View 1 (cartoon, rainbow, N blue to C red):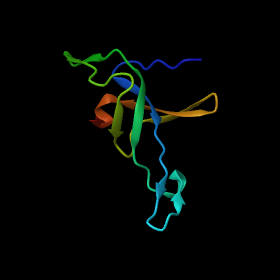
View 2: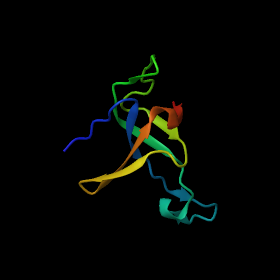
View 3: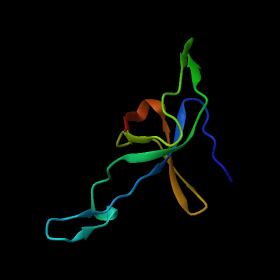
View 4: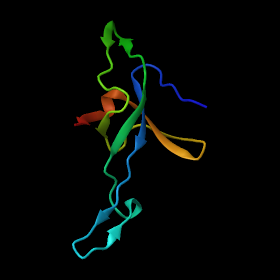
Length: 94
């Protein structure tokens, strides 16, 4: 099964990271504050809102920083994804 976003929406996969303290203790992502970084898996076609065309700026494969309360979590085939509006993406990480 495949998810294809509609309008100006983007499908993200959250990037989880492990952090090591100075003393060498590894903190799993569940014990840390979420970094709100994701990888773009699919991008919608864009949309027209009140006569203005909204073009998609992000593309498949980009790493992005998104807003804390953004989007809707979707679980498909034991994988968690996040479906967000392009306007909830704060930055592209290069």
